[in-house]
Length: 297
Length: 334
Image (tube, rainbow over all chains, first blue to last red; front, side):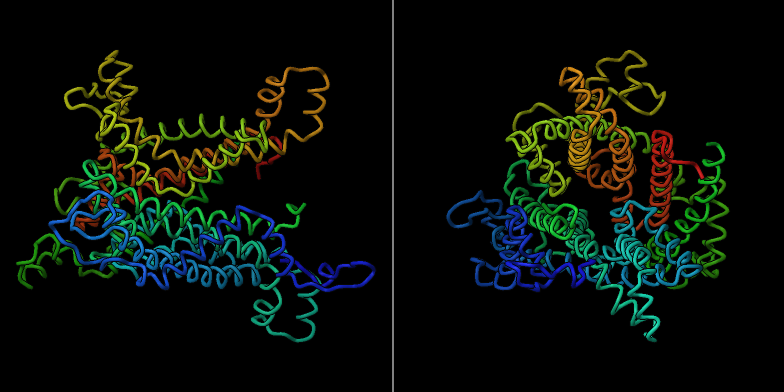
């Protein structure tokens, strides 16, 4: 994000006024209605994840078999599943898992991608070649297929799903970081930082990275939606989060055997996934527009 | 051009070697002991040890990898732990089903994606544009396996318009020529088979292609908007050309290079999505076979299928790169 101080100095009524780059981005973002809708949904989802236990009318993991596969009613607004569990409570409970996996997987992949991409871009030469060839190998797989292969080897469970999804997305971040670093590493401020005796780590993390963060932030926001979709896909295939814990994808997977007679069993978890992914996509798109000066009106 | 293709193919060798090493290591280091899987829960330690010796599992990992690589280069990816049949044979028999589904999905995605994108661009900021873009946004946000289930409920269970699952009605399989049922039934003039194969492929192809439709629509819209604003389009209009000719022959033709690239890249990613769609629709392809193998811990099958799909993915992406270089005269081969 090459938002130098000079760019943020605006002349208003002949008076020089300084505004922070983040305030500029926020003011751009606020104008984008779709992005604001996305952000509002994300905030609501976070609140549900944090305080969901107060919203759940029933225990999400305990069911009454005599009440299985009930259609939506006033007692169970989203109906019940094959084990008589309240689908609404399970969807509320599943929110924290989806957000946790999505955000943690992106955080891990982003950290690893920043380290690999920074080293490759800054040092170049053989380090660059080895790192990027490794990234090419990971990119040689359709990402979901590689995540499935990792899950089949690592075993089932939430932590393993996070690891699998992180590994397959590292190259995306590494490539963006490397490209951004290559574009700025010959700039004067980097040369100046070198000249005054900063060490390599200081130059990379204190001087270069803060200036190339915008494409990385946008990719990470959109990456959360991909991670949530992949988590649900692993759950659907029976490889992700294990029962009885509620996770939207595994709810869909478990409901497959019953959905001819009880379509509600797959309808609501799917809507929950779609709304969550949509929210991150809307916000990510808006963030990209706000951070890209070329798109500003 | 030939030199460039050869160079790109040579560069693929280290990537493919890396792919095989990665899959092999992941499968052998983290996977449960194959000898225990074959012998089951009641096997004694001696029996397991004896089988490990026979399978070469006590050899160092690099020796096992070398043996695997020698076999793979001769077309031998080992045998299924469950059925004992050669993995390559099993995968190849299912491969046409996966490719047929992926091609049907990309055809549907291209037709709808380009149409939506062009209409949205021409009618920018109108209600049609908004509807098109909301559709595109939903397409990238919806899990394809969920869309598959919903399509089954609506079109198969409720309306009885299309079959619930499978590739063709049992007993109607056409004579094997290419392995693609739609083509084989046409080649043999078997219209009953063709109708059955067509009705079976529509829902899975729509579900699998939904994400790609959305991506192609967004790409087409943004490329078309960029082109419509250029001088030569204004000139074409000023010459008095009909709007349809301006849009389809002048604008769309120039927008096709990036659109074709996106379509090609989507074709590769459909191979990953096929795992999910095939599972939902019980489509007898490589994807559903891989999932079945994972659930049964049949690691040679998983290993073989993942490597094969990765090879196809890499080759498709290379073909797209080459096509892009061929179509765009500004790109030089070097």
